Length: 444
Image (cartoon, rainbow, N blue to C red; front, side, top):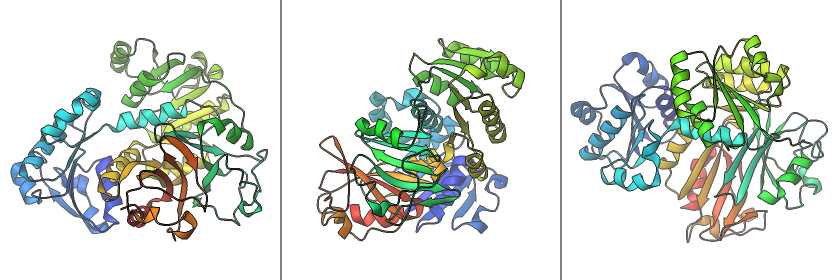
């Protein structure tokens, strides 16, 4: 597959690095030689200095007949224009990063398809959706509804009091059929559990279950549930704005932002949100704004370091749930070690969404699990595909892969070794990123 990525910013470079590890022909285009840096010498890809809206530069980089043209510069108009030009010059598919939510509305999708814009992505909206999902429950680190809510992914940091601690999988303790443990994050290691593995204190455990069994997961994990009614955001970013717009009306939201102009803009867009013009890293400000009374604290400033330390401060004030935007990938492991509740990284979220377009199998969704450095993939099982030929235990699946469940006729089903996948099933697979390509042959 030939792919051109226009824009060597955070999302573009992260995606280029990810795709360069695979058998693809990747070209990275940017107007700044400095931003391209030493990408070509360190990764298996080509770099080109040029404008994504220049016909000459697009022709020179080989846009004719390219399989996928991705425009992820910081500028929406540049991205959309370059995709329109690329489409007219012969690109088979295009994707543009945008910052106008109206463009994502279902009624507008056909229009953009008709003019050559096949896919649109708004990373801040994707990140906001993850934060909103995490704020639905107080006892989980992350919560994702899968396959339109037929299955749920719950990630929980377990302590010594959990019933599941020190239980080996071969003992039958987990054979109740009410949830499935698909992965364990221990320190820097992500474990796809086998029979001899066990859950240890302070593990981050990933469960797949149906909605009716979520309380059972909570009890087994030794967690107490409390409602989230009051949330403080530090940083008036687009992510904060979009999260505030999609959270339920019964949640009271304060956004603390030190830029006065940004506060005025937020107050016009968020009618039911209290906007505070102050420095959210100031402990006195946090006390004055009732940090000790809030149920959750979300730090989404432009500084990863500030977000991590703000969450640590919130924990010292007794806040039970903390969420930090950590865009510096090197800091994610540190945030986990410091016990930050949920870590959000918009470029890995966006890259997972885009990565789905490079897969040949019928992939419905790809979600990056930032804390585990792994992916959750929703496949559709096609008629005649290998996954439908045998029971799961007989499939010889790749290592580092765990099928958590499937959805058949809208009903979520947990799987075991004797489960037979049927054509038309939506299959939820947890795997390390390196295993996704190996899975393709089972679903094609």
